[in-house]
Image 1: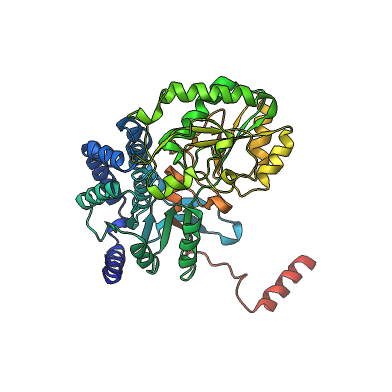
Image 2 (image 1 turned 90 degrees about the horizontal axis):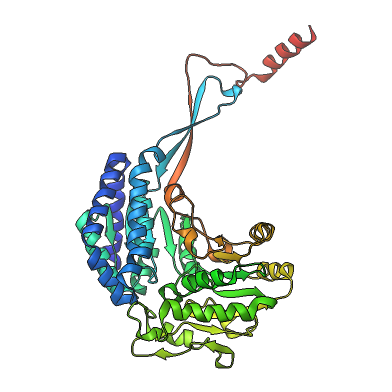
Length: 459
């Protein structure tokens, strides 16, 4: 799309929004039902597209993309009517007789920019929340996952007119053209570097934003943890989608006394879950492109590699790999890995570990494995992070009953379920003052009223 075509599209959506069509809650629910039906009917095509882009199996695509998207749609179909209702609040006596209430209202024209690692889920979920809140939406999927972007475009064009929901495909030029336009809200999921660019463009018009970023999410394994179960769940969370998950455990930070046992259990679990030769496993995915493939390989220190490390440039695959004796100065600890490489670091004092984590950028997720409830409470209270799990990984994002998002370097704002509806809504504070009574205290001249009050109290 050219800059002119994008500008015309934004103007067309703004004009449509001001017709008031999307204010009708029935209209929103009907739109969500239509989207749900088309996704279910085209599920095999969606899975095939994700397979081409990321090598995901159909089961993983449903578990992590289409299934979660359908769950969010179902949740919003069920709850949008109640979310959209005005909410009465307490009215102070000084405002007698009035009704005070908060009225959820859509922002208007919304831009949703999605990433390549979960290209379907991270496009559809914010879209669903924005529709439920009553906005018009322009979706910009990633150019790095072209097959999924294509099927998303086809689905949206089948479901909606472009003045309501539209898709803009392309790369950097289209991203820039979109960010130069006036939107009422911008929702971005991606890297910190691009997030800064989005926020900079948004600031020129003071456009509110949600940024879903990432970071180096720690996985603490305390000495009282169930080591076998911890290894099993860490391997699942770390190597899901070949590590290309914003909330994947980026590194293990474990008590030095249980490190060797933990590493041995992790090795066993990699073999159990992916086989002796993961690169021959048809259900094991691939790195998104050659650029990221080479970047991830560059983070592997072969002198510290204790498991895995094999790769195939032709298929862009890297084995689940484990590094031991890693320090915070190593290259692998200088950036978010976003790949199937798991560094293991150790601590001798949990308090020192907490201090170290808090000295770094706020991560999007944090995981703690422990059998001690006080330890779990201490870590989750004292460390700053977006969300996480106790004795598991990843699963905290798979519910519409909790908001998902980070803060600081890992982003701002949240979505999923009610939080998603709130994100894409502005809550107007309104007082409906009755006309049958009009108390005189607030009107001038004040001296006359003051003299009457003094006379009354001194009488």
